[in-house]
Length: 224
Image (cartoon, rainbow, N blue to C red; front, side, top):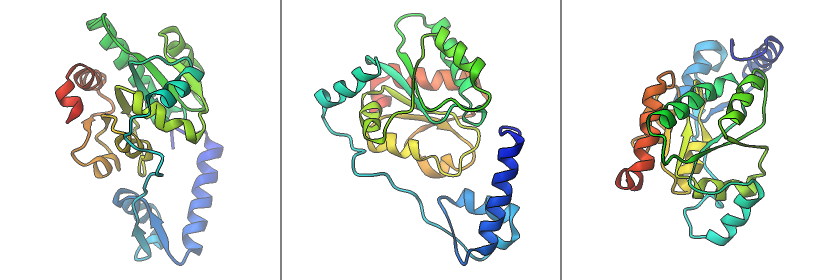
């Protein structure tokens, strides 16, 4: 709740509770979400089932260099780059991602890739956006769904350091596009990625920086 404005937290709490009470069946995207629903809402017990989410057919690891380059040029992006996708607010933990990126650059000043953030600025993001801009992070804002596969495919690393996720669809989209992933080792994400990503403590800036650098600099690890 501390990561949301009070009016949004209250609205979501009331709406979710009402929906669960009235529903005959509740579908959750992960076991983690099912446990959380049953922990906070007694009425969810015994009527919640898990059906994992899936990605659309456009998210594929294919060779579409010319098409992808055309998309990247719209946003002023030139590979290599590190990619993060998601609305920009405290729960997504981008402040620590920026700190990890800064640590990587200070310890290994050359060469280092650019960083790209895709997503709409939300509450609590103005100061962070100023810091990111000062460090040269490309802030694309909203990107339509049809452009996302190209951004995933051409990224050297996809990073998803979120503090709390009910599923984390972007990590699956990235993996479907053949992009190596660094993600948080908390909430639903270990369940979603299994052993197909590098998992890090989302509050450990050093660990996050090391994981990004390891994938970027180690071709064998990236391929694996």
